[in-house]
Length: 241
Image (cartoon, rainbow, N blue to C red; front, top):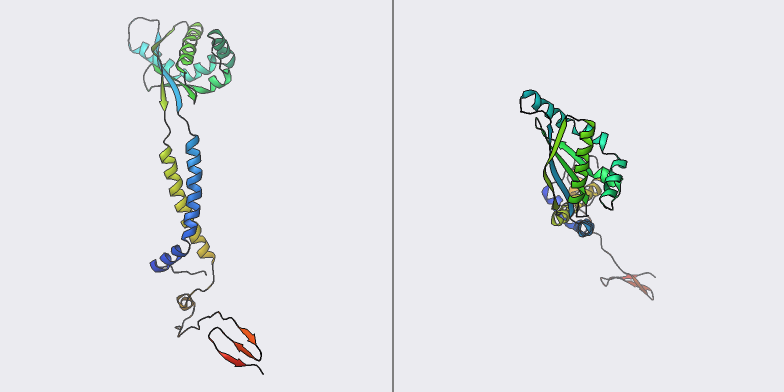
């Protein structure tokens, strides 16, 4: 039907008849989200801070501007220095059995606004023990920066420390339940919208400009032939000759 008017009563009846769809879809999405949540593991990351200082004594405006400049351009400096070959040498030198390409993609640097403090972070995924990796990489990174820019004198403010992030498994399951309910309700409404059959006299009255006076009920009957008579379920007897 192109023009369907759905009231509260018809909606209640519709969802009551199709309630099994809500149950099935919600169980499926809940099961999938539960399996996904059961496979989730804690993730680990390490972080340290670097002060991008310079060789000049004092702390006037020009020196602050210079330090802030190096801080803001730390990403460019990282891309220049922290190559896969550089990391391979660092890891081999410190007997760290990790893939240089993976380490390079896991290290990020971030500078603060108008501050010479730079944050270095190493995302280790589900593998712990990342603080040592970040410490040795940061030390070699600083040495290489000083070789490239003699005026630069960066210092590690604090040694790397590792933190653990625990996934919220309950939230994942809750999202699966809510998604299943919403998806099943949407599916029921779509099925009902595409269904053009007339189910009751109210549906017929919506199409016709005249009221419906009555309807003819449908009865299921079972007929059995015995001799020359047919007996119905209601014990009706009809002579068939």
